[in-house]
Length: 496
Image (cartoon, rainbow, N blue to C red; front, side, top):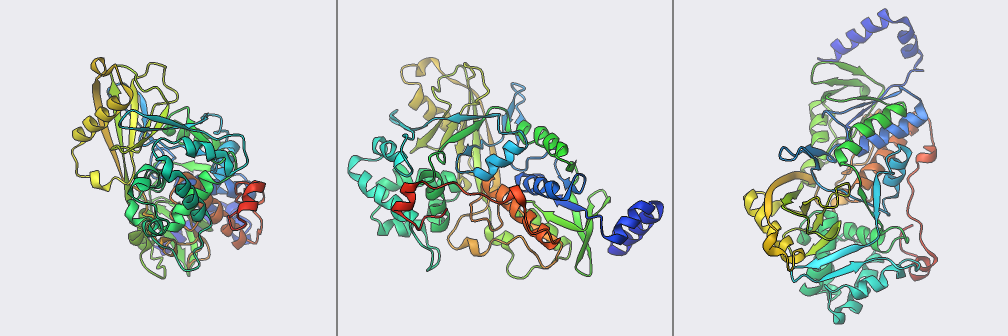
């Protein structure tokens, strides 16, 4: 349907509804569409609804449920709802925590008081914070970490602090090159840097840039005392960010329409007029927030004739995969809720926090797994299962065995985190005054995370409101983790 047909249908609607016609003519009716029901779109819709009022914002989601890439599936073998790929919430994700709390979705998260680092030889270390001001709160945890030899720990600590104060005035650089200058060799990289950065940033270690790596260190390890806290969902993510998120948005005054893929954004003389869904339905609006993935957003912009200056950022940002290996054993043998796996196929292993005490299910997560995309799924299942049995089933391996497994590959889980990539990420504004971009791929200062997605939604909402002459976002301003006095004393250059 072209713009002429759209205008004709709007004119007919206005003739049939004098009240609507009066509002449109007076420009007192401001309708906003948010395209994409992931965390970015949901955060933007909530913030806009709080300012513009009930029923002023409509969220359109292509899938049957909201949640975007945070979703679950029904396992046919057990009938259980299983998370596609395990996501967690950290204390440093302050905007994500506020967003879930405001919608009543923060309660179904369980705080984990420590991390467990394990190696194939069965050795384990607990990594927990002490009641000291940051960044001293993790000193003992680093000192007791068995994956790092004692002789390397002082140099490692110095390198962590050096990364925190690294400045990008000369541009970004590869973290591997920077670690060479810090005399961090293969041992330190395998034992600490790679497990932490690859799992956090989901890209091959050889490609990681310093900006993104520094962000991880500053926010998670050197942030406030609660920044390192890990929270796991106590319900399936597909339930939490599916129907529960939808209901919460509706209660907050947002109209939510699912099963509604958008085919085109309509505009006239660079002014947004609405969108057309794949079934031909017209959704009229004054403004649109496009909050899809970087690839789907770019494709929709091109189909809509929105020609953006600069390179194709969707292609340049690329994609990096995550592989989740779902395993069912004959009995539970994993003694912890989750653990970081060092020197293994996977980077993390998780149990369901809502499982019964004897539930034998667990999920192994492999970040930056492009190298596994062509590997046989059964081979991955067997390797992951054997590693878990070797580490955790000591003394009981003979009577513990795998019943079945399943591999789920998220081929475009995140964009890449290569050096200088921030220059490519688009901002919230476009060449059209009423069209704004959100999504974790936009410029948020954060990598591709749930926190980054929520921040992007808030940034886009604020820019849209500014275009309407509403200069404040009130309680939805982006917040940062608080710094301790020790952090200010050690380095005033650390970000707030």
